[in-house]
Figure 1 (spheres, one colour):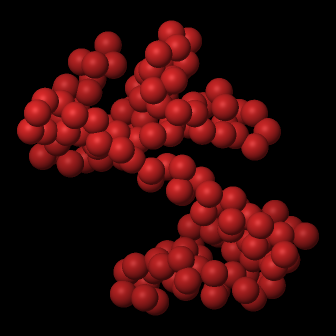
Figure 2 (tube, helix red, strand yellow; figure 1 turned 30 degrees about the horizontal axis):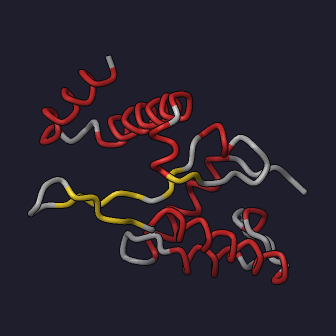
Length: 147
């Protein structure tokens, strides 16, 4: 099997987007990738039994990411908080995993890792949206927090 280049993948994804009004929808990408000659084909698991289990794992991860509770700020207000967080140190291990947020915040080493992860996400956010001048004040505040 030949190696597919990043440029070939990008070209194909752009072609799919152009064919669908400028929007590359997941279903259109999968449909294009079904063809065994497609440069996208090797990026997908075509064994339905394996893909089914992978999908259920994906759903479990999504569930763990979206479960929230509301912590009171005062008598009239509360803030939405994630119940579970994933630390990069856990993601580096086989299978990954999620930890209870309150436990992470109360453990100095885990809290340090969560803060490190937050800073990394802030850097990615800045890199992704840096061309939006409207967010300059947000970027400045984030850069101050990163220093």
